[in-house]
Image 1 (cartoon, rainbow, N blue to C red):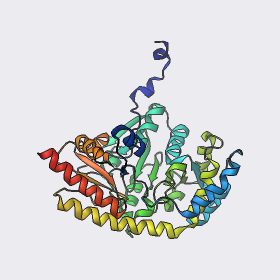
Image 2: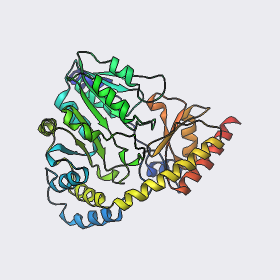
Image 3: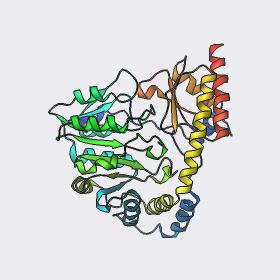
Length: 367
């Protein structure tokens, strides 16, 4: 076909992102009415009521283009984070900000270092440009900073640090991160993805925004997780003004929708909802720890709103069997972990249903 001769060769190595199955799809395919989704690390409490009300009120203005500069949201974020608005870029989710980094800074021949396993969008953005992805697998799951620092060459353009890491839930502490930054040459960008920042209560956890004065550190945050606005697609990056200026050169105009911007401002004001979501997550985490232990399964202690655990059977088989019981989880084979499952921490009732279904599935597969 003619199109085969026209295609950019760089995209042939890209594996399309596979999202968690939507509830509606499982209902259609399996004819199950009562389905719960614990696959995409969404907030089981949903969004703040204030955010929902604000979004509803904004519907009458959808015929108007959004503010391309996200003025109100940047102003609210700047106050909340104690930074300047010029140090913030807002994107259509963190995914877009990651892609903007690639479009602004990566070139064919550059090397980009990531942990293995980690969030898949780093690979997508790297390969889209034609840069070379360097995966670094440690002795244990999560980031091996010693090996990652040793992997830096003259061709290294950037390093992605996902903290807490997705899909492992592991955390790097302040001492570890700062020692790592001290070892990284000045020609290397460091992207610190803190999508799960608000879920971490450990005082040793570093705030990536504190390192923006370094000039080459960009910290990513999102409204998709604890704020419960995943459907509006609002994420942002915080870094040095010059770095943000370059990202704005490749940003699409009107990249963040009007309703999402206003809902995010309202969500940011409602810190009571954030505190309530954190409390539910902490209780649910302990509930799942106890349940997984009772089933004889090992898991990684998590600093996020999900847990990665090992199964005695192929993850894909467990995933499919769980679907038939109306429980959507995430098979970690897509992360190169063929016998691991990632489960989002839900409400008490959702967690109990998950544990009951998992016990039944493990029993059925064994028999």
